[in-house]
Every structure is written in C-alpha cells, then in structure tokens.
Amino acid sequence: MIERFNFYDVYGYFLPGFGLLGLIWLPFGLFKHSWPSKEVGSALIAVVLAYIVGHLIQILATQALPSRTKDSFGNSRYPSDFFLDPEDPTFSKQFKEQLASVVRSSFGIDLTVEKAPARKNDPEFATVTKGRQDAFFLSRGVLIREKIAAYPEQFEGMYTLMRGLATASFFGFAYFVGWTSAISQAECLTKLAIGFLTLALACIVIFAFLPIRFSVSPAMRAWLEKTSLAAFLLAFLCSGHLCGLRSVNSGSQAALLGGLATVSLILFLRFFTAYKSFAQEFAKAIWRDYVGHSRVAVRYNDTVE
Image (cartoon, rainbow, N blue to C red; front, top):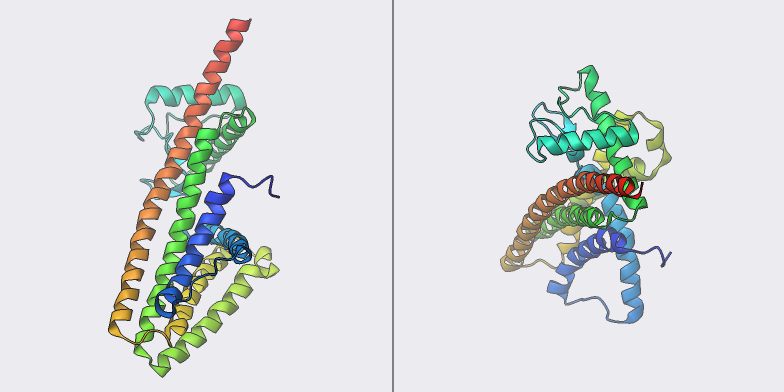
C-alpha cells in the first residue's frame, strides 16, 4: 500500500481531509486552547484519519461539484466534449480537424467536429457525446501507457485537490455558521439542532451507506446522493451549534466565528473557480498531447521505414 501511495493520494485525499479536520478543530483551539498533540503517535493517527476523511470528501465532491458544464443549449457536458464544437474557441479549426483525423485512424471514432450536438432529444446527441468521451479516455490511456501523461496528470491532481478543498471549505462554512448561531443559547434552537442532527445522521446511514441505494434506478440514486450531501451539510451546521453552546459567550467570539464562516465561503468560491480551470486544462492537455504524440509517432515510423 505504501509503495502505491503517490502524489494523487496527497493531492486528492490527504490535503482535503487534513484541511477539513483543521477547520473542525480550529474553534476548539481558539476558545478552549485545545490544540492537537505534537506526539508522533498522534500525528500518525491524524495522517491516517485525514486520508480516510479525504476519500469521503471526494465521494461527496463528485456529486456536489461535477465536472460537467452547461453549454448554450442547456446540455450538461464535459469540457473534453464541448471543446470540440465548431463554435468553441478553445482549439483552432485546423487542430480540431487534425484531432478528428488522428482519432478516426487510431480508434475508428468520428468526433464530428464540424457539427455540434444540439439538444438531448436530438438523436445524434448521445452518439456524438458518447463517442467523444470514449475517444478522450482511449487517448488518455495511450498517453499513460506510453508514459507521456505526466503533465496532464498534474492537472488532474490539481483539479481533484481544488475540488476537495472547495468541498471541505463549504462544509467548514456550514460548521462555522453553526458555531456562530450558538451565541443565542436558546433552548428551542438547541432542541432543533439535536433533532436535525439526528435526522441528518439517519439520512447519511440510510442513503449513503446501506446497500439499498445500489438497487434503485439511476434517477433515484442521484436523488439519494444529493440528499446525502445535504444531510452532511446539515450535520456540520447542527454539530457546530451544539459544540459552540458552552464556548461562545460573547459578541466578539460570535463575530470571529462569523468572520471564519465568511473566509470559508470565500475560499470555497476561490477553490471552485480553480477547480473548473484545472479541469478544463486537463482536458486540453490530453487532446493536445495525444495529437502531438500521434504526429511524432507517424513521422518516426516514416523515417525508420
């Protein structure tokens, strides 16, 4: 397991998990001066826990922050797909034609770069988008096999990191809002927090971890996954309120927590923007590297012959 630990594990799992754990612990350190132990054993436990939490974050992040983007027709599509539309300015017309030629000769897939898919009810939409996705993953596989995909993999690692940090920041925002609300000390609010936390934990267990979610239709599964995400947000909000009941006693403390919530929200927006940018750079790098690799390989073979 250690031998297989690579930069993707650090970027994708450890750093987002460590970030979320840090946000959870921050109010206890500020108000109770209770900071994590510096002992080696405690540090190792924190590393393992951060890695596990990071996996959970990425599971939720794929539903909260999908890589798909709406096109001009309202279709939800991947960047690797709509970059090949004739009106998209990301690639030149000459490059798209070269890419289509290389993919057709390599995989027998028509990218249809001269025509963009219209709407989901268009019979050609599913064929074109599915073909482009297949060609993208096949091209990526070739680059990985030839060991020339290091640059695109860095973009993949970075967009996974940004997606994980964005999700962790949004959970932190809900958590700090809960802490801030503890200034009220209202008994009815406390009872609501306990009730909603119980409901959220029940939803997480039922919708996220029980095998029943694997025996439903795709539409129902998507609904269950979104409900699980909402349940996690509610759990962070309510747990923050309950944790802050005995710690938040003044307006200055509530203001500090409100500031932390604001910073977390700003970080979420920043990380989300970076995630979208790196996801697009990843798609562009795969297409460009595959065309370059194919052209070099053809020239090399012609020279050898």
